[in-house]
Image (tube, rainbow, N blue to C red; front, side, top):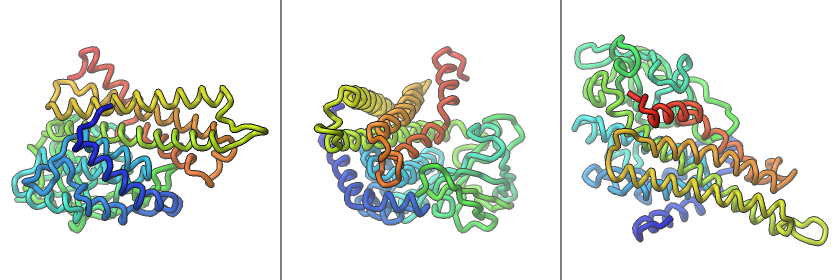
Length: 380
């Protein structure tokens, strides 16, 4: 995988922040169900919170390949921070694509500086990952929408300042009745419920969001009423590619740990690296990580080239990379033996976080269904 000089510089900057600021806090963040405020401040200080936003709106104006190179480095050190970061970027992209001029000026420069953190509130208890079945309603009243409903599994719930929220603006079924609005943290009627206690990604403040006749200015509608797909598809594309990059980062960290352990762990007179069974595991893991990395970068390059009628690559990248990370972290744990199954080493955290990525930003089964429909010409 070849990167340009500028892309390598971005990668190196992200690697340094990850090494100095994210990695030392990752274990405590996971154990204490914390939130990566310090890490996000470090990223903001390096100008990375608005990486893909245009310079005119305070961003760095960088390409998607630079973004995935940075995300991989962050995830190698702390997957929770990487997930919060990717979610913020996805929220930024929604406002960039669908926001009116006033909304862009109000939110994006502050989000690019890291002064405001973005979240994407889409999943509901009654519809899971099928956002098309969302029931949270937005009824127009004068110059406002009154938004009522609830969301679950929202990354950065209660911590984010800006919530790009999927709402139903008409009774039309499916996406035809859906829209996206921007809800401010301080809006009357917005509140937060239970925080999730999950297997992994414990440093992301995942939780419930409640909206009780929450007044949202008409100017905070992204795109047109019923225009969910026009705004959401670019967001989903970035989310899938970002998740793929996270998966590569987690898997690379697991591979690095397995290699180091195989060299240092002795059984009898020699290190376990001398055993053919371990060599087979390492070679298979390394091949899978590099294959996923190439696919993720190609998906990022395709996004930089412009919109595609059928966004096959982001779906393939997310599906392949996240399933790969689940396998590789499992194999890395096997290389570590009984020690890997304890919380004394980071490989068990990598294993738990990798498993979560096969569910987050659309589960693997849903991706397979949508990919199959696209490839067979059945996708609308």
